[in-house]
Amino acid sequence: MADGGKPKVSTARETLDTLVEMSKLLNTGLDADTLALCVRLCESGINPEALALVVQELRRESATIKASESGPS
Image 1 (cartoon, rainbow, N blue to C red):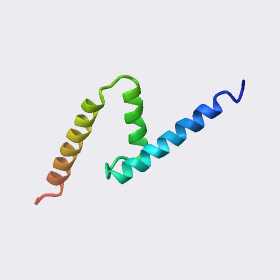
Image 2 (image 1 turned 120 degrees about the vertical axis):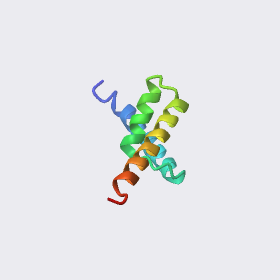
Image 3 (image 1 turned 135 degrees about the vertical axis):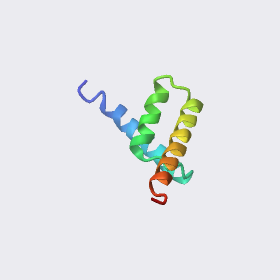
Image 4 (image 1 turned 45 degrees about the vertical axis):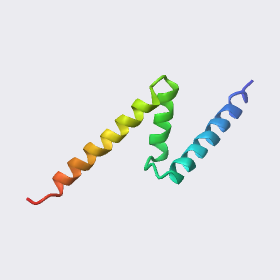
């Protein structure tokens, strides 16, 4: 019974690795940690479309802040 969780962990790792590769192919800009967090949120019941909108908005806000910080003094 001690090895009962091992195949489950292995399958989860393979699934995440596949998602990371798909993310790279689709040029999402999500790193493995962020992608894993998004998957966990979706598994917890968060609406994937709403999550995608939040990620997009955070990226826009981040770009705005970076642009204002690097602007003329």
